[in-house]
Image (tube, rainbow over all chains, first blue to last red; front, side, top):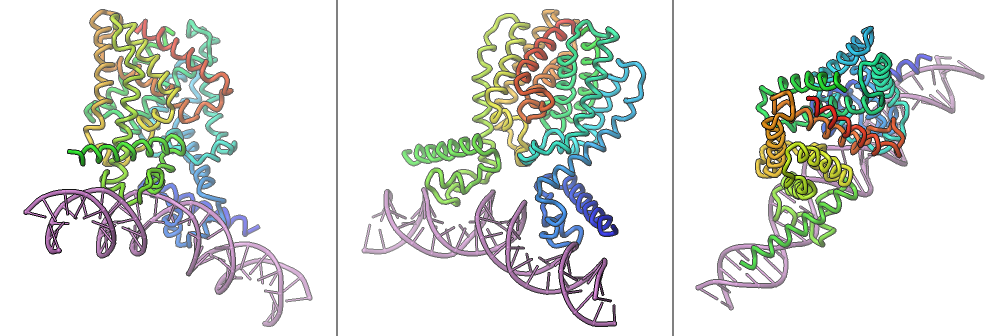
Amino acid sequence: MVTEGKKEDVKRRILDAAMELFREKGYEGMSIRNIAEQIGYSPGAIYLYYKDKSELFYALSFEAAAVKRDHVASAMGIEDPWERLVEFGRRYIDFGFNHPDLYDLLFLTRGPMAYIENQECWTLGIASHSFFVQTVQDCVDKRYFKSTDTQAIAYTLWCHVHGLVSLFVRDRMRMYPEAEREALAGRSFAMIVKMAECL
Amino acid sequence: MVTEGKKEDVKRRILDAAMELFREKGYEGMSIRNIAEQIGYSPGAIYLYYKDKSELFYALSFEAAAVKRDHVASAMGIEDPWERLVEFGRRYIDFGFNHPDLYDLLFLTRGPMAYIENQECWTLGIASHSFFVQTVQDCVDKRYFKSTDTQAIAYTLWCHVHGLVSLFVRDRMRMYPEAEREALAGRSFAMIVKMAECL
DNA sequence: GTGTTCACTGAACAGTGTTTACTTTTGCAA
DNA sequence: TTGCAAAAGTAAACACTGTTCAGTGAACAC
């Protein structure tokens, strides 16, 4: 099956070109024609490898999720659940600040509607979320919190870090001087950690 | 100045049509041609009233900000700063859940880049944010919190409510059954309030 | 009545995602 | 090696998008 290998190869090149264009010029700039030009194909050829643009978008999301997984991985091995939780949050924010384009793609870009149907592209996201909730559960089990509502605790913490990164990525922090933004985010993270301790 | 009045009238009709289309079909569906058709004009006519689509987008944002201001207004008059703060947060979330399209427009839609330049359309947003920060400051002054870092406190709370609404609006809560989502959001808000108390 | 201004149109331009008929290349069996 | 079918790729079209611009017709001023 040499053909299969070649097919996979072309899919890779399309994906790489798409990712590069997305990073450079955002979702708008990532046009089928631009991708085709970049890999020296005609626009129609793309459709021999991806059903439509939304399918290409799923594939891109999957890529981004893998990068995030790797970025956060270092926290996974930490023994103590509380420290693991804190490090996980820190790494999550770090990913957002270092890869705003990918964060945007994963959590902020309004993907095509069919996106919802596609389960496969959510496996990584769900895995990450499960790990996160499990870590919170471990903390609850070890009585790190007064509250035992694992779900609400997890969701609350997620809201905070997601809100924090979103406001930054989508440039809604213009009321703060640019130089202060990252420091403010750091203070805020330290604060939520403190708050979580008496939760 | 009959002409001026008529001009304002047409701008209103354009804006109303744009808002309706945005609510129905999102940013994509809000095309110049659709707007023009809706008010019985040719596409080119729109440009006699708005420089380009981004200017129309500012105007729409301004509208949305006004709706939000009114939605949240009831919290403004509360005497006690802490209760005012909590009610403000509650109303903020309520706005997001009841007007996901407008929330999207205000905080999640990636507007045209020139958006950043346009100061005017941010006046309402900045006013709202100032009021919020001032309320936190009032709480700090009255020693409601142990911490005195007003900026970080305000930012942290904002991150939480924004994250909470965003995840809902952009449909990133799929891991939770639909029926539970709103309740979970409620529990999370109660939790952040409790957390803030020992902040 | 003539001239000017203004609101508006319709066609064009360059871009988008997508489909389809057609051509080229490839792989394999006779 | 030849012949042929299947796969791979192209070019052109369709229906969209934002935007511009020459032209049209009506209203108004002198």
